[in-house]
Amino acid sequence: PEIVLVNTQIPENLGATARSMLNFGLKKLRLVAPSFDLQNEKIIPLSAGADSVIQNLKKFDFFEDCVKDFNILVATTNRTRSIKKKQINFVDLNDIILKTPNKVGIVFGPEKSGLDNNHISICDFVLKIESNPLFSSLNLSHAVSIVAYEMMQSTKNTMKKKSKRIIEKFASKDELINFYSILEKNLD
Image (cartoon, rainbow, N blue to C red; front, side, top):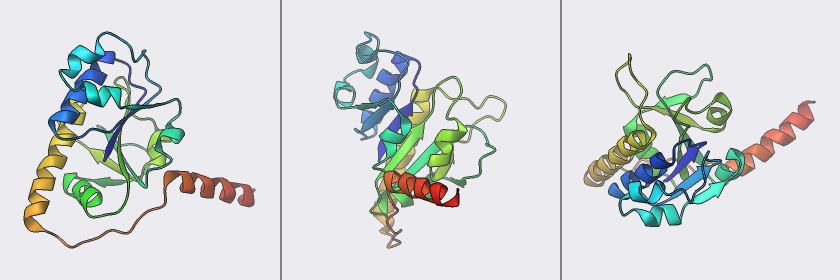
């Protein structure tokens, strides 16, 4: 899977995210419209040796451009939203990643407010990290760490069980957006 960070606001979180990704074997990072310059001097020191993740990241100006080649997107959130999407847990996430031919992206929102409903509407599933209901907001890099750790643990457990369940391939987001555009025009 690839990690997608949307509108990241704090350069230190990019460095810490890269570090936590590499800690758990993830290397593919996409960044959408960060609020800082990627040459910021605070990024590399916090990556603590995960420079390769930073150097190979893909930067996009728009979320739709960033996600058009994914088949499945999983939005992360710390609260229930008005937009209804199927909520999954880490076992479900593992099934989606390991037992499908789909290209999967896991999407994290900005530190201040998280993903907005427009971002979530393009995603297929919502993953909520269970935490203290009275103080549920996690630091961005910590949220990425938890998800990456859970994926690594699930991968180990799945390899032991060798499940045969396969999920079919989904359309890419680019194909889906084109379909919606045609549908909208025809409905008008």
